Length: 458
Image 1 (cartoon, helix red, strand yellow):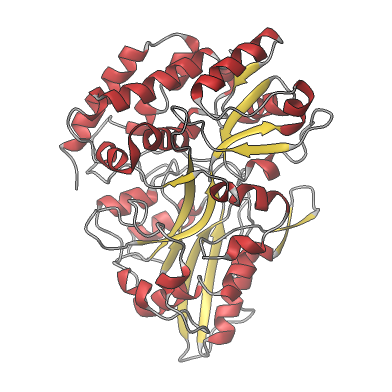
Image 2 (cartoon, rainbow, N blue to C red):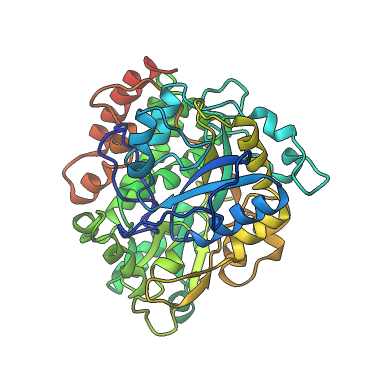
């Protein structure tokens, strides 16, 4: 399952997109023996998610093979913050860390707020090891131009974009074909479909947890106001939440809450979120916001007869308007206190090589039941999606079918005690569905939090 923000470094928790689930951990060096005297040792720490850890071992080994005298000391763990957090507090830092923003422990956010990340802008102009092309020419457009990689808005890159997943609405193609229904292209069509489904005892909407409304709401902000409006909202501009554009977004979510299955809030937590996802598989709800990991996450769950995954961007606000799909991507970074920064930058540049991209996508790993699968981690590398097959072709073709990509999130701020935009903006959806809060109360709360965070902008 995906992640929700918290600004607490201590007390790291166990989630990673809950697609990573479970508490077991793994830690292993890439090589089979201790480094010889004089060798360079590169410490790499990577979160283990549903993609598994084998791909990281393969990439580390391949990097060693192409860099004589280098040993990669690799640590992977599902609870990576627990493994490296204490050592970092004691001054022992990895050289490279793959750990995205948005996890409950908020380790990456903490480093951002403390100016603890190395500027890696120069990596973009480096030549990809083993190739004759610059890193900037390999990375797909837009991925190094958002606050997810440039958190300070100073034109500098501090985090490298890693595995990406288009986020949108998942549904059962088989049910739509059976009923003769079409996927809505506008929100008005969505409400009309919701009324048809309700007449047959089917809810229009479900969601795993309110954390999934980050990608949903970000895409919606793009739809109601475009990229410039989105950026203004992400920087907590004064009065932004009282604009017509913001009101349109709030209205859509509030109305969607009335079309949401009533059981969802009770199960919208880390323990029971799959019950909310199961509603789509059981034909009890039509749509749910999610990312590409949900296919693997629900692979062993019961599916209705004729079930076939479908995937679409958010409906447009009006006919002929833009339809958006938010792209969630993970990040890789170098701690400012790292000991081997130049070698670390070389390693990050290597991550965009065709060799590394193929290893990330196609290394064999195992499901919880012991069956084999391919890792399936996709790098934002130009043209790489053309090589994909099956479900992945469906997912990554969303931007070839008319949808636009939404990127970015809220700007970094100093920590403000008791204030959390994610909890307020997204977490309140449970209360909208249950009727415990009104839309006006929601808007007032978001405005208050935005005002407090604007004063704490870095």
